[in-house]
Image 1 (cartoon, helix red, strand yellow):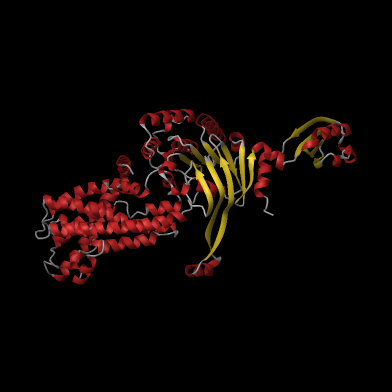
Image 2 (tube, chains in turn brown, purple; image 1 turned 90 degrees about the vertical axis):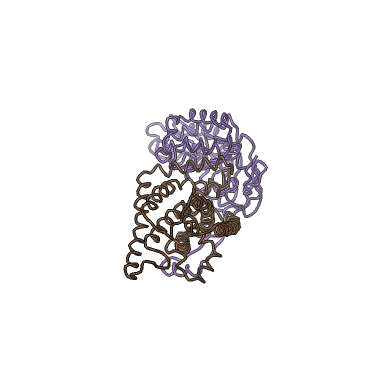
Amino acid sequence: MSPRLFLHVLSLEARKSMSYRVDFWLNTIVGFAISVGYVTFLWLSIYAQSGEEFVEGFTLPGLILYYVLIFLIARIVTGNSQSGIVSGEIYEGRYTKFLLYPTRYLPFKYAENLGSLVPSLIQAVVFGFVALTLIHAPGVNNMTAGTLAMAVVSVAMASVLLFLLFVPLQGVAFWADNVWSLYVMLRMVCAFLGGQMLPLSLFPDWAQTVLAWTPFPYLFYVPTQVALGNLGPLEWARGLVMAGVWCAVMAGVIRAVWMRGERRYTGVGI
Amino acid sequence: MITVNELRKSFFVHKKAPGFWGSVKSLVRREQIEKEAVRGVSFEIGEGEIVGLLGANGAGKTTVVKMLAGIIHPSGGEARVLGHVPHERDDRFRSQIALIMGQKAQLWWDLPAADCFLLLKEIYRIPDERFRENLDHLTDVLGVHDYLNVQVRRLSLGERMKMELIAALLHDPRVVFLDEPTIGLDLSAQRAIREFLTEYQQTRRPATILTSHYMEDIEHLCRRIIIIREGELVYDGLLEDVMRTYAPRKVVTATLAEGADGRVAEAGLGELGEVTDAGGGRVRLLMARSDVARNAARLMDVLPVIDLTIEEPDVGQVIENIMTARRS
């Protein structure tokens, strides 16, 4: 796929994602408020019950800042990867047109995914700035321009990794009529093991050791901790290498799934 | 440009017993049955030729088109389009073909048609000048210039189909597959698209396969037809020859002078042909094509005929009979 076509698709999708004003604002404000709201109330009651200022090294403002950042980063990393677009196109036969075009399907879909990120990027800038101004969390927030720059690289790598993680699962649509339940399950696994529900540092040591060999921490948790300045350059680089290895593994899996899947594709609907 | 040799396609479909227990059992074990959709079809199509591919629903014509466009893999036999094996989907092959599906939108629903065309320009890497020239020509001929900036989902079915045609033809394909291009359109939109396709075929001369359930499309656009029945090719030849081969009799209708109905029974019409209708001052017979002149003259001798018409049977009906006849 030519870089020119990639950028064209990205720009079209970006314009499309901003053309639905109601969806843009509802998604921006309501979605974010609910996500941050429920963890805030949950942890408020946990801190009140415990009577402690620190829970596993986190103060309450520090924990809330962590959640704000990880939600924003998760939105950027996720884009539309989890929306089932690929499986829908296979199931409904809309994949047919991509078999006819002289271009590659998955880079096309990834360009669309990046284009759909524009609202999330705007959210990240606005809410991130507000959160960092309002929430003072010494010990949790060690952010600098350098850690932010490193986090941008981690987020970019995580975005590719998440996309590649979901594609083979969506490719199951070549065989099964309904793959929705499968990727809802993977979404929950990614959210839980990616640190979106609970900081991974609160997991038992053995679980953290095992998780470090899986792709999940490198999706949301590591980029968030890198942004906050809680991981050094060595851990940052290790995260990138692990994410890169998993990207290569998933690329192999996708190739195998697609080679077999396309042989079964029947192009329903025409 | 298109060569098909003993092409075959089988599908495996799940069979599920009806009812609640059938659904429960299917969770554990499902029976698969093999369905042969295309059984050894062979034909060739040359440059500039437009061929009507006809068959009843489920006969296998769309499956053939899908295999030739590279959408599905054949189970056996061979197909070559422009020298390429379609299912290998080489970019050089895909840059030279187009598939227009009347029942499936290919344009991006949320975008104006103009944006879709610009995207296709990038996908097919069409040079600026050629893109502008082709777009201007196609929008002028189809009369859709005013709708270019309207979102595709807001267009009427006829306008959308015209935009689909433009999208498919912008890159000057050398092979065009038209799958039901006029389905669901009103009569004037059908006519506009037929006229456009006639003009396009004459000026650009792609090899074209047209499937349609509308006989007007076939009669207007195709000299040659291929009929597929239950996956097998049963006819490949000129449309006009179908009538000679499969309709050996013509329809002769005579309007009789007043009071002549009573003479029909004794006129011995059975010797002239098969009487299909008699009464109300009129008789209708099916007469052998080779004897029609002599027998029509004899009919006028034995009955007081005041008007006589000799017609071909309805071509659509003849083809439908071929398409739906059971395999022996």
